[in-house]
Amino acid sequence: MKSDLFSNENMVQPAYAPGMSVQNAKSIKYAVNGEMLARQGAMIAFRGNLQFERKGQGVGGMLKRAVTGEGLPLMAVRGQGEAWFAHEAQNCFVVDIEPGDTFTVNGRNVLCFDASLAYEIKTVKGAGMSGGGLFNSVFTGQGRLGLVCDGNPLVIPVSPQLPVFVDTDAVVGWTANLHTSLHRSQSFGSMIRGGSGEAVQLKLEGEGFVVVRPSELTPQKAQQH
Image 1: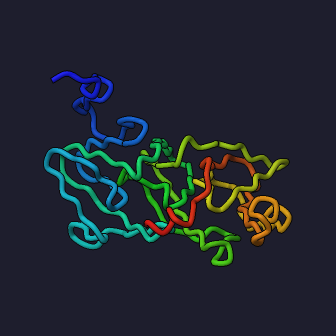
Image 2: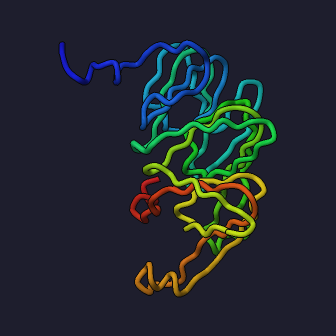
């Protein structure tokens, strides 16, 4: 059988070390040797001796649960083997989190991560229900975090002299030590949204960077989750 489909570019190669890697622009490969965590429903293929446990059920007790902003819980993947993860053909990226780092991520952009990372769900300060109820995952510790994004994200530096304003539907995540608050702009909303109402942005101040996806979440897409 001959086809470009079977080229080396598309052919999966055996894993040489445990852990996470980018398989291609739209998927992440994880060589599991123990345990890792992933967004429920994100597994697209696996091989080997792996068990997938949903709804926080863990061996010897309850696994700490985390629910993303869209109500998408995590699953634990245990055993030895290889698994591939993707979500709606979105672009995939891997972030290395080092000791002392804190990275806040919008739940809808979390795909998978090392079990060595600590995480908790927090309401974004200054963006309560009036701002859409932003509940983000805060990651600390040491390990790798797999993210998805519609298109290639923008990484925008934030400085004390130059705060950044981000649409709440477009923000992916930001680094520690950034102060967040809700910013409303009637004139901006009238210009962008045809006068349909106030625009709400997340204002980030301090020293660090914010990751932004190059699109807004459409109501139709939000309803699919």
